[in-house]
Image (cartoon, rainbow, N blue to C red; front, side):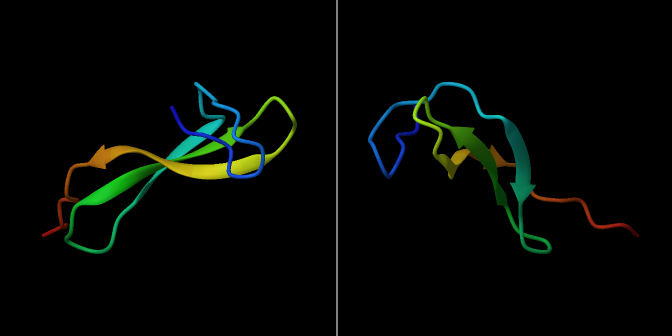
Length: 55
């Protein structure tokens, strides 16, 4: 579980997730979190498979 960098609170569920990946390489899944104190922060949620290039 990601921790808020400002207050240290642990947050379970992200508000939003997206894949951050350079072309042709394996990427990561990033999540946007909001702690109980109202701070927003981003953290790595998981690994993403490499993108398939269009032929």
